[in-house]
Length: 475
Image (spheres, rainbow, N blue to C red):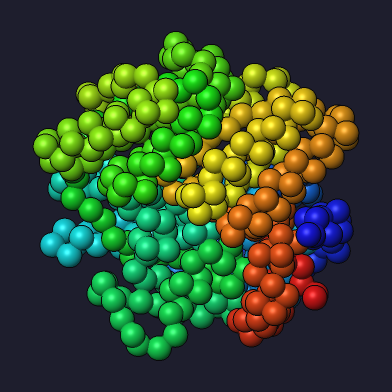
């Protein structure tokens, strides 16, 4: 098994600064939408990962496909790195300027271009966030279900193949995206896919760019599947005597084919954190937070079946949140779990990892991970989209104590190695970024990774698109 691939070398890679001639051209083209201010650069040079890297040389705020194409054409001419930036919520160092260059901020590309209610599709610019989209289409009785927690940009969600709390029923961005507009490394605007639900026309370029983490091009527009708002929605929490009991309940729910919409695990540490942050007063015990969608009758039937399964494993009676306000309060707290946990240890950083395994191996994966971190003595918390076999473990470390960082990385590596042994993946939704490059080789194999390198070299011959991410530039 590999350690994270040459991480220290990646963080200290040779920088390729923006030459003055390119800065002059950017100033002429973008005016005040180009910034070299240190504060702005620092904001765009830091994400939610635990890595510290010097900021980009400048930040450009794009507002159109033409803006993005202009930046990339100049970057290609001068061999300067470009790092796409959306909401800055990534966890694996995706937006860090490890080789310097331009941070290309697409957050102002925030127009909803078309809503086709009859076809259940929508086309948006890349900077539109999921909450913005849902606020726009709710009045038409529609919603977009992919919910990674943070109010991420939809372009960034496509670039990292995001999923989240609804994935167990509605899938991930891989299933949600029908087509894209992408600006290539040379500044050409290309379109992939259509609004049709299927196609067998040529290579599936849409899926090539989904999950590419900004290394092949900049996603500027996204066409998405949307769904009718369910007739009835109910949310419930159920407390368990142990994490294992909660996980075994989840396994039974999925194996019985119950079409549950959300099934989230929070351990006692995560609940303690959200109680402090959101003033909830929940019992500090392993908990499943579940949501049921459908007709009144189907929701009642689903809930009754799940309650029976939970009781078999020591689960208590459901505590219901039936009003929109009560549901929102619970899910907001769940989405705050990461930031809430950080506040339990002031000044800490979080080394967080996620894996995804076949549902039948989920209990083994979580139980062993908990045993290892308990033995190591690091503060931690667990949250998970356990309905699809995906969970996150966050290790809270003092950034001034190298031994804690080393322990967290060792535990993270062991968790990933276990997932691969169980025929799972090194990351269910965080992506590879800087952190999991060695594990990608373990999972996919050297031949597959070499094929990825060849695709990268063909589409980005000067290695300007988010260099240093997914795999280092040289084999």
